[in-house]
Amino acid sequence: MLFFKDTEDNILGEKPENVSVEEFKEAAIKEWNIFYDIWFQQGEASLGYKSPAEALMNESGKQRALDLIDGIENEILRTKKFLHGDVENKIKYFNADELRKRVNIKVL
Image 1 (cartoon, rainbow, N blue to C red):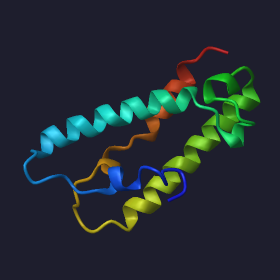
Image 2 (image 1 turned 90 degrees about the horizontal axis):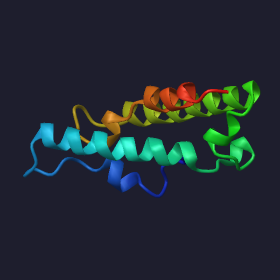
Image 3 (image 1 turned 180 degrees about the vertical axis):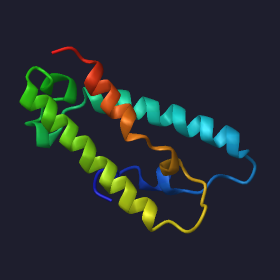
Image 4 (image 1 turned 60 degrees about the vertical axis):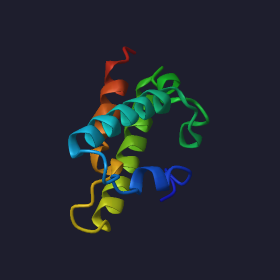
Protein backbone atom coordinates (compact mmCIF):
# COMPACT_ATOMS: atom_id res chain seq x y z
CA MET A 1 0.00 0.00 0.00
CA LEU A 2 2.00 2.95 -1.26
CA PHE A 3 0.07 5.91 0.09
CA PHE A 4 0.10 4.65 3.67
CA LYS A 5 3.41 2.78 3.65
CA ASP A 6 4.59 4.35 6.92
CA THR A 7 1.30 3.86 8.75
CA GLU A 8 0.15 0.45 7.51
CA ASP A 9 0.50 -1.31 10.87
CA ASN A 10 -1.47 1.46 12.54
CA ILE A 11 -4.42 1.47 10.12
CA LEU A 12 -4.52 -2.25 9.35
CA GLY A 13 -3.98 -3.53 12.88
CA GLU A 14 -6.97 -5.12 14.55
CA LYS A 15 -8.90 -3.50 17.37
CA PRO A 16 -7.49 -4.38 20.79
CA GLU A 17 -9.71 -6.78 22.74
CA ASN A 18 -9.99 -4.45 25.74
CA VAL A 19 -11.55 -1.61 23.67
CA SER A 20 -15.21 -1.52 22.67
CA VAL A 21 -16.11 -1.26 18.99
CA GLU A 22 -17.73 2.13 19.61
CA GLU A 23 -14.64 3.51 21.40
CA PHE A 24 -12.42 2.15 18.65
CA LYS A 25 -14.63 3.68 15.95
CA GLU A 26 -14.62 7.09 17.66
CA ALA A 27 -10.83 7.03 18.02
CA ALA A 28 -10.36 5.91 14.40
CA ILE A 29 -12.61 8.66 13.08
CA LYS A 30 -10.74 11.25 15.16
CA GLU A 31 -7.42 10.00 13.76
CA TRP A 32 -8.75 10.07 10.22
CA ASN A 33 -9.99 13.66 10.70
CA ILE A 34 -6.50 14.68 11.76
CA PHE A 35 -5.12 12.88 8.70
CA TYR A 36 -7.60 14.65 6.38
CA ASP A 37 -6.60 18.08 7.73
CA ILE A 38 -2.87 17.34 7.48
CA TRP A 39 -3.25 15.85 4.00
CA PHE A 40 -5.01 19.00 2.79
CA GLN A 41 -2.04 21.15 3.86
CA GLN A 42 0.79 18.76 2.88
CA GLY A 43 2.70 18.96 -0.39
CA GLU A 44 1.97 16.16 -2.86
CA ALA A 45 4.29 15.07 -5.67
CA SER A 46 1.39 14.57 -8.08
CA LEU A 47 0.37 18.20 -7.48
CA GLY A 48 3.84 19.56 -8.25
CA TYR A 49 4.74 19.42 -4.54
CA LYS A 50 1.93 21.82 -3.75
CA SER A 51 -0.59 21.02 -1.08
CA PRO A 52 -4.17 20.35 -2.17
CA ALA A 53 -5.03 23.70 -0.53
CA GLU A 54 -2.45 25.45 -2.75
CA ALA A 55 -3.56 23.54 -5.85
CA LEU A 56 -7.03 25.03 -5.55
CA MET A 57 -5.88 28.35 -6.94
CA ASN A 58 -7.32 27.35 -10.30
CA GLU A 59 -9.85 24.87 -11.68
CA SER A 60 -7.25 22.49 -13.15
CA GLY A 61 -5.47 22.29 -9.77
CA LYS A 62 -8.78 21.55 -8.07
CA GLN A 63 -9.46 18.75 -10.56
CA ARG A 64 -5.98 17.28 -9.99
CA ALA A 65 -6.61 17.32 -6.22
CA LEU A 66 -9.96 15.56 -6.73
CA ASP A 67 -8.28 13.01 -9.03
CA LEU A 68 -5.69 12.38 -6.31
CA ILE A 69 -8.50 11.74 -3.81
CA ASP A 70 -10.06 9.26 -6.24
CA GLY A 71 -6.71 7.45 -6.38
CA ILE A 72 -6.45 7.33 -2.60
CA GLU A 73 -10.01 6.05 -2.34
CA ASN A 74 -9.31 3.31 -4.89
CA GLU A 75 -6.20 2.27 -3.00
CA ILE A 76 -8.20 2.05 0.24
CA LEU A 77 -10.96 0.05 -1.47
CA ARG A 78 -8.41 -2.40 -2.91
CA THR A 79 -6.90 -2.84 0.53
CA LYS A 80 -10.29 -3.37 2.19
CA LYS A 81 -11.09 -6.04 -0.41
CA PHE A 82 -8.21 -8.18 0.84
CA LEU A 83 -8.99 -7.88 4.54
CA HIS A 84 -10.36 -10.93 6.28
CA GLY A 85 -14.09 -10.80 7.01
CA ASP A 86 -15.23 -8.31 9.59
CA VAL A 87 -11.85 -7.33 10.96
CA GLU A 88 -12.27 -4.18 13.03
CA ASN A 89 -9.46 -1.81 12.05
CA LYS A 90 -8.99 1.89 11.34
CA ILE A 91 -8.99 1.63 7.56
CA LYS A 92 -12.63 0.57 7.78
CA TYR A 93 -13.49 4.15 8.80
CA PHE A 94 -11.63 6.00 6.04
CA ASN A 95 -13.99 8.36 4.23
CA ALA A 96 -12.77 9.91 0.97
CA ASP A 97 -15.74 12.27 1.03
CA GLU A 98 -14.11 14.02 3.99
CA LEU A 99 -11.13 14.84 1.73
CA ARG A 100 -13.48 15.95 -1.05
CA LYS A 101 -15.34 18.16 1.43
CA ARG A 102 -12.11 19.98 2.28
CA VAL A 103 -11.37 20.55 -1.41
CA ASN A 104 -14.90 21.71 -2.21
CA ILE A 105 -15.18 24.07 0.79
CA LYS A 106 -12.17 26.06 -0.41
CA VAL A 107 -13.40 29.00 -2.49
CA LEU A 108 -11.45 29.63 -5.70
